[in-house]
Image 1 (cartoon, one colour):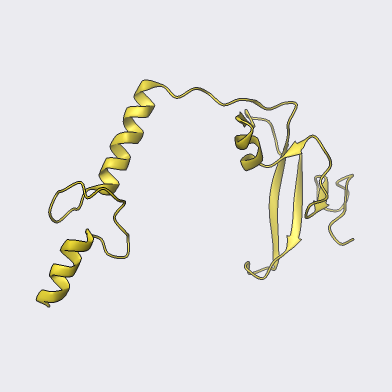
Image 2 (spheres, helix red, strand yellow):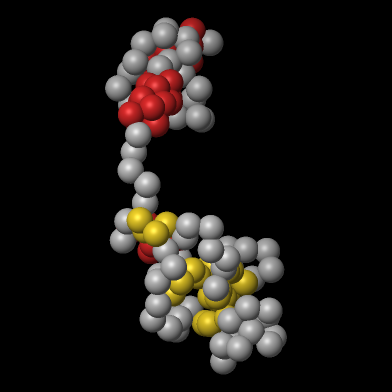
Length: 122
C-alpha cells in the first residue's frame, strides 16, 4: 500500500490511505458534523490518495484526534448580526440597490433583472 505509514517514518506524521484511518481520528468536516472543533490541537495524522484533480496527483486530508476535540462555541448575538449583514450584502444588487432574495451570482455581478436589461440595451 503506497500511502500506509502508521509510524510517520516516511511522511513525517502517521499517514493512511483513503478510507483506512483508524477509529479516533476525524477531519475538520467530520468534527463539525459532530458539533466539535479541533481546539488548537496539532494535526495528528493525514490521509493521502491519488487524484486527477490536483497537479501533483495526490490529495491530502488532515486528521485530528476526537478525544482532544472540544464542543463548538455557541453563536453570539454579535456574530449572528454580522452574519446576517454579510448575507444581506450578498443579496443586494449594486445597480438597483434592492434585496433580491437570492445570492447574486458573481458571474453576473448584478441581479438577473438588471443584467437582462443591460444585455437588451447593448
